[in-house]
Amino acid sequence: MKVHFLSISLFSSIPSLRFIVDSFLDKNFRVAITELSIKNSNNYFVNKNIEHNLIAEFDNFDRLKVGLKKIAFKKYLTICKILLSKKDDLIYTNDFQVVFLKLLLNKKSKLIYHQFELIEPTFLGKIGNFVFKYVLKNANKIDLCIFPEQNRADYFINISKALKDKVMIFPNTCKLVTSNLVDEKSCIDFIPDSQFIVLHTGVLGVAEHYYDTFLRATQLFKKEDNVAFVFIGRKTTEIDRFIEENKITNIYFIANIPHQELLKVYKKANLGLILYKGVNLNIEYCAPNKLYEFWSNGIPVLAHTLQGLQPLFNNKVLGLLTDFSKEEIVYSTILNLKNSTDHLKEEVKKYFKENFEINIYQNELNNKIAALFTFNKN
Image 1 (cartoon, one colour):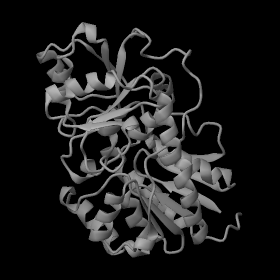
Image 2 (cartoon, one colour):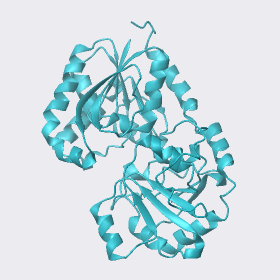
Image 3 (cartoon, rainbow, N blue to C red):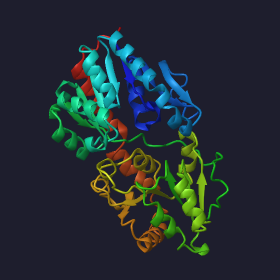
Image 4 (tube, rainbow, N blue to C red):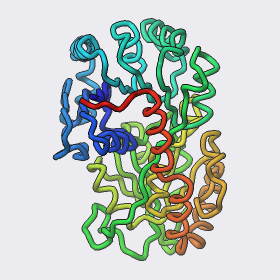
């Protein structure tokens, strides 16, 4: 049997999916991945027995944004051709548009919809709204729906005809990190070891992040506090303007690096940041992959009190949820954590392994998939 991971987006950029791909490979399934790609963004699937079909490849994220309209017809045509040619395989997708096309064009293949981004119909355009409403009305025909958090699953069930027994929770988690990379060079080696490193990874935007209050809070720290703020990833032009206008000098911005290189940075970080602001349900309900990556590396996390995070922060070794709308609270909270987190790395790792490691959820997914098929592989 062959598993087709079909996406009109950046499938390989979703860290937790690489473990799911590996799980199929371990069971000797044939695997094909069809997606968009950004050059040198990761090499997790290099030298693996995977049929990797690139609808289009871009030099960087900015080029991708500019080029999406030009390849719109090509990406949907590519997906349609694959769906029409596969009748007995497994289709695995993270895009509701692919679900729509599969329901229309392919009635025989099994379908798994792994929703990473909560979709609110009110934020979709006319065509997107039509497509998503069709998916909702026919959600009972999806063989398995996977969601990262329970609140996202409940939301989808409430607005669709999805069957509860076809829904499972699979957090955006990962494996416990056990490799010793502490002596390898990283992009933050210029920061002295005496500094308490507060780390943010991923895109830093405007509306969806507490960027303004947090960046102002960084200015409350004195030199003798020995706190360094590191941001790795893309930032918007509004962030650049804010930094220039407020003459912020004690934080470090580093451009995107391959995901694997983050392991070297995590070894040196003391506190992880999640700066999401709940401007919509997708963000309010989220517990992102960076949260689990921090914990898997033994790094406590500081975040705002989002609904998606509150059920998870049930042990003090994991970090703290606080009010990111108030600069003084952010400042005092980081100082308090600085004085109490030095000895927690192993405790954080232990708690992660026992409660969040991906193997826990992978076993359940394997059982769900086994129930869909008789495993007679070609």
